[in-house]
Length: 207
Image 1 (cartoon, rainbow, N blue to C red):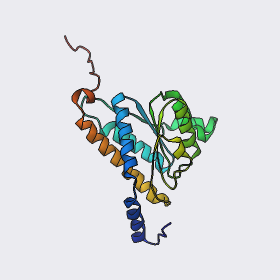
Image 2 (cartoon, rainbow, N blue to C red; image 1 turned 135 degrees about the horizontal axis):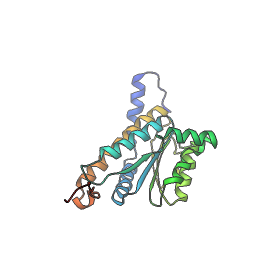
Image 3 (tube, rainbow, N blue to C red; image 1 turned 60 degrees about the vertical axis):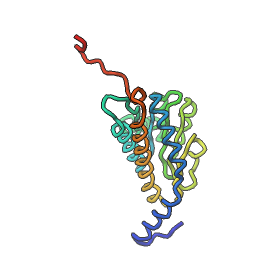
Image 4 (cartoon, rainbow, N blue to C red; image 1 turned 90 degrees about the vertical axis):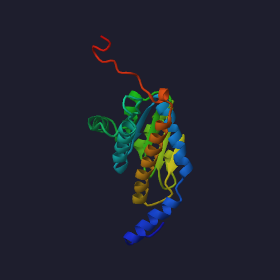
C-alpha cells in the first residue's frame, strides 16, 4: 500500500494504479452491455455511498447519453434512485434487502445486474447479485482491492488494482466513462435497422 502524505503522492498512487488497469476486462464489459442494448435487455445498477452516486450517474450516461433521436434506447435503471422504496425495505425488513427486493420485482432472464462496490463485500450488493443469478440475469461487477465476495458472483468483473478507497472510486468513475464512451461509439457504428427502436404512433397520424 502506497503511503500518501501529500497531493503529489496521491496522484502518483493514482497514476501507478492507472498503469495497471485491466483493460481487457473493461472491453469485455463493453461487449456485454452492447449485447444487452441490441437485445433490449434492462441494465440494473446499484451500490452504496459514492457507488450509489456513481450508479445514478452511469444510468444517466447510458440512458440519455446514448440516445440517438428516435432510435433504440438503453433500458437502464439505477436501483439507488427510489428513496421511498429503499427506506421502506430498510425499515420494514433489513438494509441488506434494499436492492435484492427491487430486483425481484423487475429482473428477467438475461437482464444485466451491474454491482458497484469498492470493497466488493457490501451485504446488500452481495444479496442483490445472488437474487439476480437466481433469476437468470447476467451479473457484472466494478470493485477494487482483491474483488471481495462479489467477484465470484459476477459473470464479468472489473477490479481496480488498488487498496486505497479514494483511488478506487476515482477510477470507478473513469471506467464508467470509458464504458459509456465505447458503447456510444459502437452504437453509432451499428447498421440503421439495429440501432432503430420502435416507431412512436402519434394520435391522428396517417389521417
